[in-house]
Structures are given as structure tokens and as C-alpha cells.
Length: 508
Image (cartoon, rainbow, N blue to C red; front, side):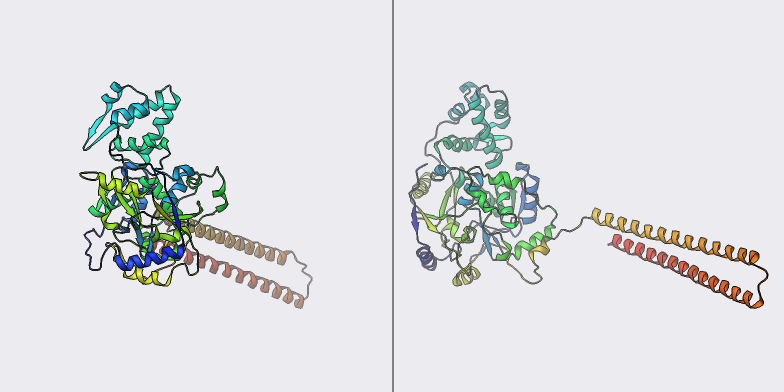
């Protein structure tokens, strides 16, 4: 419970050998012949987070790619999962906080006592505002909001404000209320406890709940998950050097990056189902991988204690996210490690809390190829929990899936611009034909005038030459007139064909 890590760093080759042997002895999280009880389709709602962009992402994912048995996303033949190290980098926690993990205490102070300590308000004030919502005690968010605006003590203002952020952003549960469990975690943050394992635990648990029921509201740490998603699917200016500076805040930088919201749902589904390793931005550009936390004491992976329950995940599944070579991961027991803080749970919490006192880390090892020869075969044989299989038939490059598809309004605007250009060409053609016709008329007039006023003393031969010259000039202008009329007719036909084509496009 908030104890310091006692790390042991192990050699990469030794961990690879241990992982391979252990997997052969214990098998995977799901055994061969397992029949999934999960829904093929999951409808996700994120209205509690009031985050439209995440809602659109979930509408596209449909959550069917979350693999509960392995606590990771599985897109075709690609595993991805947020890691402790990635979230620590995103939230920019000081190094001293990385070495302590939160666990639910066996005995905690009364909710009213914790609120009095955080807010500085009287017991009478706090007690009057505590509400019972289902199985949990809560305080209305509006009461905390009013305190932030009116408290004269700046230190208390600063304490109440982040508590509200934790409720709104990380651990929303009951709409409009701050849960008692959130205050327990928050009360321990000043003791240099890192909330990152807890944030991950509640993220994975919420994903599991939605996947299991086939629908639900994703209410845990949604914004962080969205940032993580964008960092692995969008190639951006990396700027790795910035991670070395003390004043570098990745969330601030990421918030300024434009987001893509013009991709069709069908394209997302096809892309994620047929995702290949080369389509992924494996290492997030805002952090520098170091040693990898891969297990805790007697566990073959990393158990995570949340504020309402526990779960586990296997970082060895996603070594490529650490810019390291991917090998077979131990996953046995992951599917059975989930439990709620109900009934006889305290013994299991203590076991996990003690396990975090003896963590195991491994040094990353980069090599080419990025995967070991046996990994690909293991991945093909692995039993997943009702995850859509990949189908390379008709698959395209990722650039094609993410190609901008014009909206109906954009198509109409393009048609109108094209019609406007065609009309302008027609007007110019008519103007040119009129100018040619006027010029021809003027030349005929000049011809007649010259014939009347020309010298009458010319010989017959001279008159014949003059007439022949004028006749030749008349024929020349006649041809020019015919050409102008032909161009005018051609323009009319082109305009008619363009209008017909536009009507066909609208009909589609």
C-alpha cells in the first residue's frame, strides 16, 4: 500500500527464454477449444465524458477489438495496449512518484473525514451534502464547484480543483457526483503515490464491462485513451529531443495537433481489421523507452489495482511499443485475475500490493527483424476472445483507408464550380463569335465603299484583279464566320453533356 518498488532488472535474453518456457508449460490465457460468450458487436456510449471526438472514435471502433482475455486491443494480427510507462510520460509524473503504487487500504477514514481534510469545511457542512447513490457515497460536483469559486484559502482551492478533475476526467461514475473511492486515491497523492496503475486498471475494467454486455457507457479515463490512440495511428513530427527537457509536456503539445474527423466508419472497420505492423506508429513520439516493467513477484505479468476492482495486463505482448524486439509473451492467468472489491477481496488486494514491492523489469533489445521467428507462429495459434479475424482480400494501403472522402455538400459545390466554369467558357465563346461577325460586317462595308470610291480609270484587267482580290478576302471572312459558328455549336454540346453528367451524379 504505497510501498516503494524494489526493482530487479533482468537480461533481455533471459526473459525471452523464461517467457517461452513458461508459455509452453502453462499455455495462454485462453485454452484451445474455448467458446467465447462475448457479443459480436458492442455499442459504446461516452456521453458522461461529454467528449464528441472520442464518441466518434468509439462509434468507429465498436469496441469489438478489445480483447478481454489478454487485456489489450487486437487489430487483426496486431496487439496494442496503453502501458504504465506511456501513461507516466503522458501525465509527466516526477520520477519519485513512479516508484509508488496505490492500493485500496483495508481500513480507510470515513468519507466525511476525508472531505473535511480536503475542503477545510466543517463536519456539519460535509455531512449535509453527502448522498447515497446505489452502493457508493458521493458528494455533488456542484458543491465542489461552488467551493472552488468561493473558498478564501488558496491552498484549499488548489486541493479541491484537482479532485474535481480526477472525478470528471479519470474516474467518472455517477453523473454529477464525486465518488468516495476517488477521494481515497486523491487523499494519497500527496504521499507521492502514482495513480497511473489505477488509471490503467479502471480503463481496462470499463472496456471489459462494455465488451461483456455488448453495450454500455465507457466512463474511465476516456481522454487519455484517445490521446494514446492518436499517438499510435497518426504519424506526426516526432521531435524526440523534446522529451529530454524538463519543461516538456506532451499533453499540451498533442492538444495543438489537428485531428482527423473525415474518415468513414466503414474505412475504419476495414483498416483496423486488416491492420499490419507497418501501419502502426509503434513507439509514441513523446517518450523515451527505458527499462520495461513486465511482472510483479509471483505474477507472470503486471497486476493492477483500481479504485473499484483489480485486473492485470501483460506488457510483454507489446514490446514493439518500447522499440524492442517482440517475442512470445506469458499470458496464463490473465483471464482469471479480474475481481471487484466485494466480499472476501482484501486478501487478494494485499497479495497484489505486496507483489508490487518486488517488481521485475527487462532491458529493451532492438533487432532486425522486429519479431522473433517463433512469435508469428504463436500469434497464429493463439485463441482470442471473439475478436474479428483479419482478411487481406481487398485490403488496401493505410493511406487509402485514411483518404479524405468528400461530403455530399463538397460534391455539390464542386459540381456548381464546374458548371460555373463551363458557363464562363460559353460566354467567352459567344463573345468571340460576335466579335468575329461584327468584324466581317465591317470588312464587307469597307469593300463596297472601296468599290464605289476607287479610281474609275482602271483598265479591265486591273478591275478583274481588284475584284478577284476582294472576292478572295470575302471567302476568307466567310470561312472565319463558319469556324466561329462551329465553335459556338461545339460549346453548346459540351455544356449540354456536362449538365447531363452532373444530373447523373446527383441521382447517385
